[in-house]
Image (cartoon, rainbow, N blue to C red; front, side):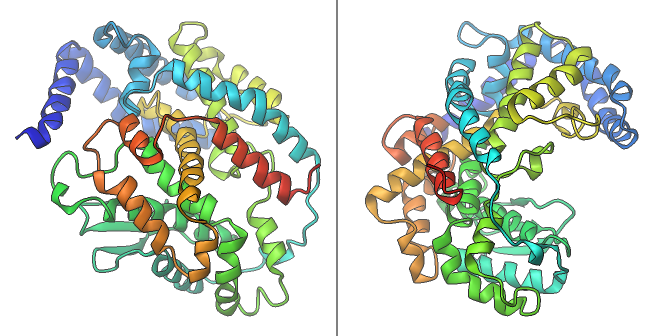
Length: 425
């Protein structure tokens, strides 16, 4: 019983929260969310924020009341929502994190974006048959150590990972014939999630502790494999010949250095899900700033398109041409998911710190010369994966890296990586 006492405590906390919310208001809110996604889709299709605005106003109004209903001495305002997606993280934590992004990363990003990358990317505009992409994805899964006896690879419109315990992990991918790198990196990303799930202690199967430790910890694993391992030159020194053998015609004459530059190219972009590794945290920072102001009562739903557009101009130098490419691009707010976005950037930052600590035990990228990631997987299993969610997220991260989260490692990692790729002085 004591082994899973925290599960009882967390379940009770959740029930106690719900008891503080008037039942009729909660029922009406759930009914609203059933309709809101379709209204958001219609607004996005018609490129008109005003179609969605009245619904979003109701969603925000409920969440503002919800915060008041359930806040405690320790958690007030937006902190209530942040804690629901990443237990233990508050505005104080995220403010320190995003302050580093603003003051240290944003100026560096502008330097990178000002320099044009010398690159022949004509091979990226060719057609890559889906069947061959599936073949290469299977090869990547084998390379990264995905256990096919305990999981499957399938196809879906949007890549995702799900399952029921360590012995049933399901990974999906999507294939675009005119964008072959998309399936490579969405695939590696999902395999990062899958490896985490497969390496949890099987004794935790079918308990509330049987999944990953938190949203950010799970994202740290997908980003670790996708960006730190999957976009490294060392990884492709081993696996680029295989890629060329699968796509003989399309990649004939293509040099490894050009492929490596292509998959690490940084560009200012409007769409978060299409952003590169370097600019991605800026997209998240913008959403965090907006949500924080919204729940502080500093701005209202009617102000969001203007504020969104101003921030994209300020931080990425981009004019937002439409609601579809701006305020309406994400589904999260239509589902009432306020406080979710910051976990994406936190996951990337966690990954960089994990990488830093792992390198103290062995040379991570050099270990890829073996042709697989067994040493990496074993380290992550022992330091993080096996625990599932048996402890609070911050404690799990502390066990993994031997200390507290420090955003400096993330900033240093990005600056070092892109200084080299872009040959900056």
